Length: 102
Image 1 (cartoon, rainbow, N blue to C red):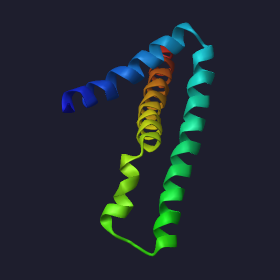
Image 2: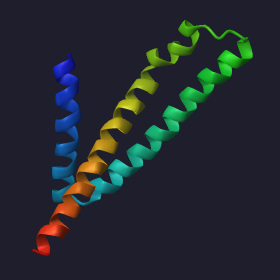
Image 3: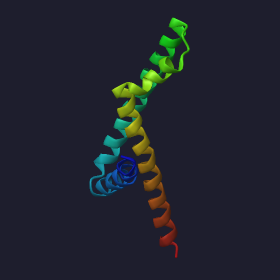
Image 4: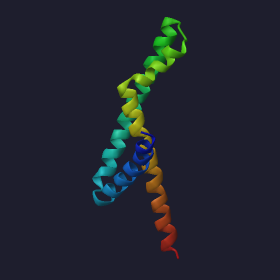
């Protein structure tokens, strides 16, 4: 499972970048998905914190229950992959700029 997570973290952003190079509209799609993911991630986290404060129970199981929420997991996973994609894309553009000056 660890290998799958590591490969996914590397290969999915690479595939996103290659697809975006071919279809420029995908950049907007990726950005919109990241925006929705950030909003969803924030909502789930804030609701979980609110529930803990409201109930007055600060048990580790209560706090960590948010990690079992599928929306939290999906949005967090996409957001993580998206950040790697952005770093990869930025690095690629910087490399192209440096190489064009040589």
